[in-house]
Image (cartoon, one colour):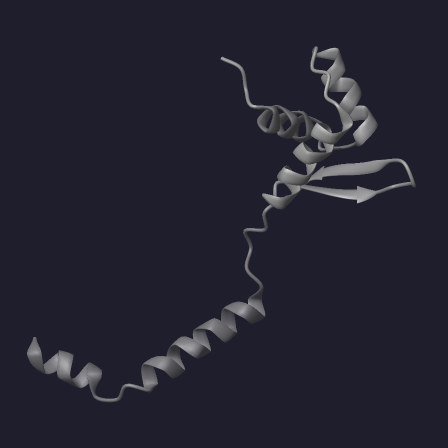
Length: 104
């Protein structure tokens, strides 16, 4: 079973962490995958749109390709703001807690 091109390119970038477009192209050629420039660029664009990689220009003719790392940690201020909004929302319904307590 062969992997789709996008998956293969993503795995190569993930293995390297970050590399240039010319380095990635050389890696693919070594594995026997020769891509026309337009298909190579479309694959990179698709992966960038999916939020899996980030492509930026190093020089006029060379791009840097990096894996996008998902940030799992939440900002402390955002957590406090969310908690305050939840309390304010719940406070907007006085008597709801009292009605539920009486039903039990």
